[in-house]
Each structure stands twice: as C-alpha cells, then as structure tokens.
Length: 154
Image 1 (cartoon, rainbow, N blue to C red):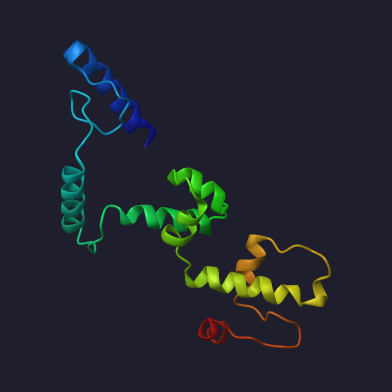
Image 2 (image 1 turned 180 degrees about the vertical axis):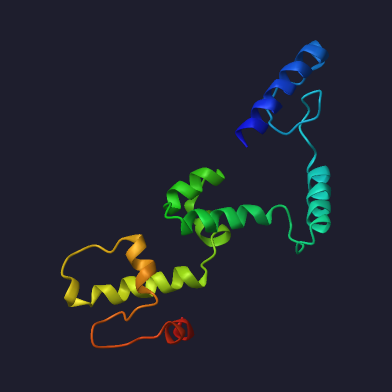
C-alpha cells in the first residue's frame, strides 16, 4: 500500500506540472489527472463492477463505513476514537447507526459480566486475549457452560 501511495503521489506531482494553473489542487488521493475529485457515481459504478468481477456479494460502497466502524470497535478502539475517525460531530451517530455488534462481541460482553461474579480471580483484570480464550472454556469453576449454550442465550 505504501508503494502504491508513493507512486500515486509522483503521478499527482507530474499532473500538477502538466496541467499548470488548470490543476485543481485540493489534496485528494483519488482524483482525475487534473486534480478534480472522482464523482460518487463513478466510484459506486467501479465498486459494483469490482464486486461483480470478483463474484462478491453486492453491498453499497457506503456500507464500508459501517463495516469499518464495527471492525474498529471490535479491535478495541473506543466509541470516541471511532467517532473521530468517521468524522461524526456526535458520538450517538456512530453508536446508533454505524456500529454493529457481532456474536463474538456479545460473547465477550457476557464473559465480562460473568467475570464480575467469578470470585476465583480476585481483582485481576481480564485481558482481551484471555477473554477470547475463555469463551470456549468453562466460565465459572465448577460450572461448565458450553459455547453453544452461551451463543443460544445471546
């Protein structure tokens, strides 16, 4: 990706030289040779074409924002960090519209709640790695809670 962006930067510089004063310098990464930004209709068309060419299911280009928000949250970023990344003025927009909770996130939430009542651990905090490992192990000593049962209750 870095190499691609460096090549693109060189191309933009060359285009600035070639177009001179007619070059539209708005610092867009994806633009026409004259610097004019790509039109959303063109982007949507090319995105749909790329999905079809690669036999991928149809989604809207805008749906990538929703996926990005969900993946960033899943990777541990706070809602505030995701809000800033997406450029939302209000965190409720990010929370209510753009973030989606998947099964793994539900399992981790259930595990964290369960760990509140697990007196065998004392005051130790549960790391992300340990949370993920614990989902398939018994959650409380003496009680076996199977992963399937946990999934069915969420």
